[in-house]
Image 1 (tube, helix red, strand yellow):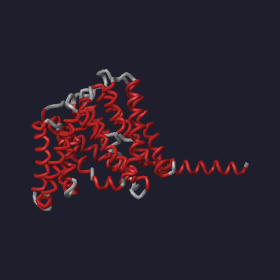
Image 2: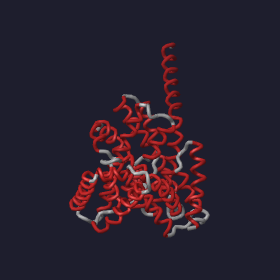
Image 3: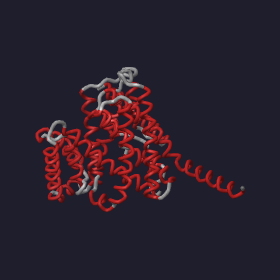
Image 4: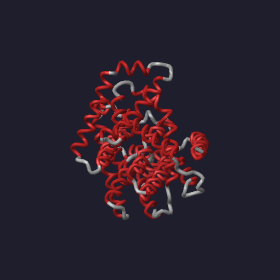
Length: 377
C-alpha cells in the first residue's frame, strides 16, 4: 500500500506541473516509475495492490477505446478514414517492423514493436489539439480520423495476438458472437440503460464499474481474452449513450491509468539487456516515420505538405496503447524499448504540436523570401 500512496502523491505533483506547462503527463509518469523503481532508487515495488490497480487501468482504457468507436460516424467519413489510415498504417508498420527486425529482434518481437511504433497516442493527440486551440484547423479532422483508424487496426491486432494457438476462424466467430450478444443486450435494453445513466445518485457509477469488471471476469468462461470482451462492451454501449458512460467511467480510468503508467515504469530495467543504440535508433525512426506518413497524408488529403507537417506534429507521440501492447505481449527488452520510445516521442510530440504554427510560418516566410530573390535575379 505504501508504494501506491507514494506513486499517487508523485503523480499528483507531476500532473500539476505538466498541466501548468501544457505538456503531456504520460511520459513523466513512466519516468517517475523508472526513477523510483528497480532501474532507479528502488523506492517503489510491484505488489498485489498495485497490480490490481494497473490491470484496472488497462481494462478501463480498452473500454474507452470501444466507446469511442461509433460505426455510423466511421461509415459517413469512410473515404477520409481509409485514405489517411492506409497511408499511416503502411508507412509506420513497414518502417517499424523493418527497423526492429534489422536491429536484431525476433519476428514476433518486431511485430509487437511495429504495432507500438505505429499507434499514436489518442489522448495526447486530442489533448494537444484542444490545449493548443487547433480544433478549427482543417487538419484536426484528419488527425481525429487517423486515431479512429489506428484504434480499429489495434483491435484487429489484439485479436490476432490474443488468439494464440487457437483456430483463428473459431476465435473470430467467438468474438463476433460476443459482440452480437452485447449489442443485442444494449439495443433491447437501451431504455433501461438510459434510465440508469440519467439518475443523479451513485447508481450510474456503480453500474458502469460493475459492468466493466463483470464483463472482464466473465471472459475466462467464454475463452475470449478480457481485452476483447471489454472492447466489445464499449462498442455495444456506444450505441446507447456513450457520453454518459464516458462521464461515469472517466474517474476510474484516469486514476487507474496513472497507476498503470507508473508501475509499468517500475518494471522497466535498462540494465536488463536493452541496447541504447537500438533504443535511440527506434525512437528517432519513430519520429521520422510519422513525418513521412504525415507529409504524404497532407499531400493526398489536403494537397499541401504544410498540412502534413501539422498532422505530423500532432501524431508523433506514442503513449497509452503502445504501453498496453508492451504490457500484454512484450518481453522485458521489448517493454524497455517501447517505454523509451514512448518517452522520447511524447516529449518531442508535445513541443512540436505546441510550436507547429511557428514552424509552418517560418517555412512559408522562407519560401516567399526565396521566390522574391529569384524574381530579383
